[in-house]
Amino acid sequence: MNFALLLFSLLVVTGVVTAMDVLYFGKRRAAGAREPWWIEYPKSFFPVILIVFMLRSFLVEPFKIPSGSMIPTLLVGDFILVNKFTYGIRLPVINTKIISINEPERGDVMVFRYPEDPSVDYIKRVVGLPGDKIAYEGKRLTINGHEVQLKETGDYLLKDKIQYLKEYTETLGKVQHSILLDSNEPAALPYVKQFPLRENCIYNNNGVMCTVPPGHYFMMGDNRDNSSDSRVWGFVPEANIVGKAFFIWFNFSELRRFGRFK
Image 1 (tube, rainbow, N blue to C red):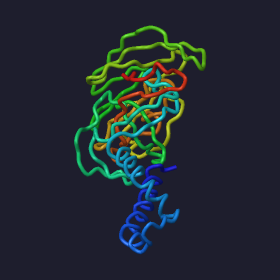
Image 2 (spheres, rainbow, N blue to C red):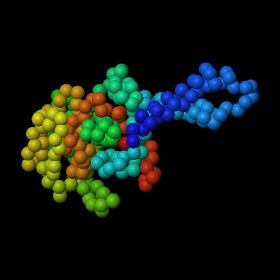
Image 3 (cartoon, helix red, strand yellow):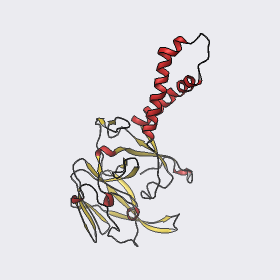
Image 4 (cartoon, one colour):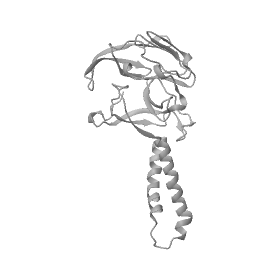
């Protein structure tokens, strides 16, 4: 479901009814007469829908983490907030940028519309910027010829699978965060899709090397061996950006998650 389009449609309908009542129906209604229900309800909901629409379109949008691809940074069931204006002001529904503010940086956790199906929102970490040469071979990340250093921090328990993975600290740009690696998973990708600009990538038995095209980004999950990301389905166009994730506000299973974010 395209919630933004649904919200916009409700805003238009309630707004039109409210305007028509102010300009026409209200002037012809007898003094003290009660508003008919088809005017009363839209007029009551219009200001609420307007506020929600403005907040969601230009300030912050809630998002629920549906998978484990961003563990340990984000857990399944985390409710997070996404900053909608960090990377610029975009027109709602059509998602066209009208004012540019900042560009995504390496290490940002970004929500975007999945290139294969723009009606679906994905969340991953920005690894490659336009023009970057990215290599992920032997489970080691190299950016523009410089290997990103990892520091092992111990074992991480995946509670739902009762499985331990190796946890490492990785630094991308100004951001230091944790990633997980599964020693039981091979370095080669199990499958790769046909995606636009796939000629920018070279795949081998040890991983992948890609040159990020202009206006695109290379995204990866922090749970590296359990993430379907740019290694599999390609680059994220700038036009697909939704916003920057910045705050965990709830998790039904772990109430202590409030405010945690790396």
